[in-house]
Amino acid sequence: MRTFRMLISAGLLLAGATGALGGEAPAAAATCVACHGPKGVSANPEWPNLAGQHAGYLEIQIRAFRDGQRENPAMAPFVGKLSDKDIANLAAYYAGLPRGTAANGDASMVATGENLSAYCKACHGMQGVPAANVWPVIAGQQSVYLQKQLAAYKNGSRASAQMSTVVAPFGDDEFKALAAYYSQLKP
Image (cartoon, rainbow, N blue to C red; front, side, top):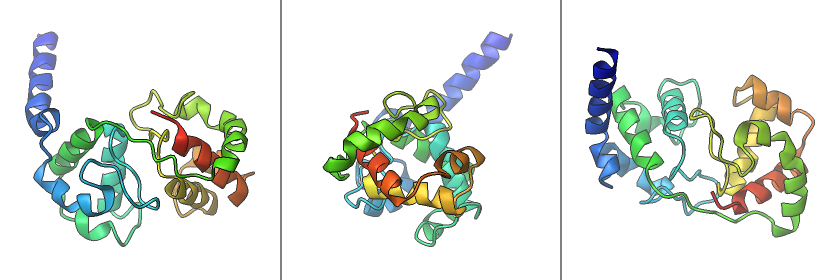
């Protein structure tokens, strides 16, 4: 009986994500493309790539924007009226797209960033792709975006006890080096 329920649940989940699996963008994605690109890869280094990101992570972050737990005036108007189903469909869609590699960090800082990445690998994996679905893929991510997020964890404007602890001893130079290293990794 339990197996039957699991199969029904899986079928319903897949039915709800058919647009993502079939390559069709959900309707709510129409507002995302201006910043995050038509295929989830942003042309602006200050905005994150969504393509290939873990669905669980995307759901958590979009809900946090919608519910005001994560503040961003640019995001608020676009996510404010999304339902949980809309968010799940968006997350599944973007998770199903192929990841890109921004490679837009300062090339002279990649080696330093690689050395510093030892602090990151326990959670984000050896190549910037964590096993946990609720943690972000950072390989190939936009360099400037990564720098800003590391600084936000340090100054407390973005909340995570784990991240705040890890970045506490670092400053802008280390953030820039880490961002350069991770932006060029091929996910």
